[in-house]
View 1 (spheres, helix red, strand yellow):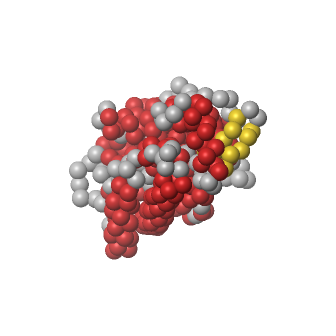
View 2 (tube, one colour):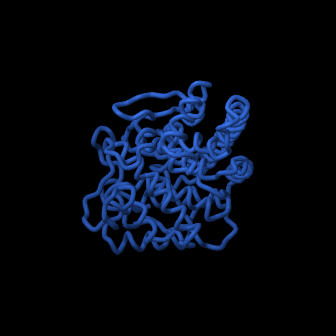
View 3 (tube, helix red, strand yellow):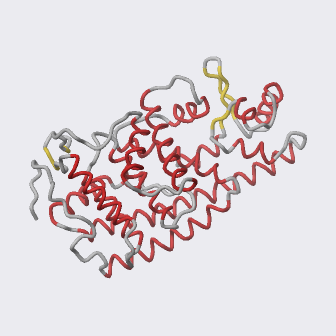
Length: 360
């Protein structure tokens, strides 16, 4: 293989790789991962209001995915910022919310406008999450270094070459062959990271593409499965896996790593969805028994749009006007459903059990 860490890898091979990517171990792991994915997809329908899952799990993913790039915010800052909408927020929190916006954009583009996973959409995603007008890298000099400053990888250089590599990737996404889509996703994720088409935001864009690909292939109905937490927990294996594919054409360990991550994450996400469903049902029953005059399905759903809510949350949902909404939230606090916290002039009402599910 013609590879040198310090030289632009313009010879990066196109997909599919010239290697055995359907070994016995890979196919066995793919069966397990597909089973877990199917069970996750079914569980998603437990929550009638799908936006609850998309918003809350998507925001949690945005936080964890950004942490991989050392963009760190706290749960408190993130959920308060989400409840505040247009208020001034700290830069790391803003970057996390932009990731959420990019994910939403991709999902809506595919579902409502029938967009394909191709170069224009890739560029739109990175522009949203970086809040910039950047496109494909034109200037040479991009190198990936380790914590010691040593060059570990130099991605392809030249806009024409990078565009060519991305075009092949897009073609592979829609190739009609018998390859299991989960195995295909592992190949796509490596290839996007190896092309490294943008000056910044490649990792986060690549992880958004993972989710959109699973939806495109019909393995998910909504974006609820995210590998970021698994990657953080197994970060060394992640980077070693990428490196060994590049240097040794070692596809089997990498594919097994991704498939194992998909299985574990699907199981954990299904458990989280079931827990949210159970908590929603229990909360609704309790509020209906204690506060029948204010109970409504819409009110309960509003409490689960985000673990942090404000008076405006109820107003925007059309549940009540300001004074009545304030009274509703105070009554809910009195029976222990939410906890009010005053920060500056604002009062936030926190759904602690819901927050615990999302952050565990």
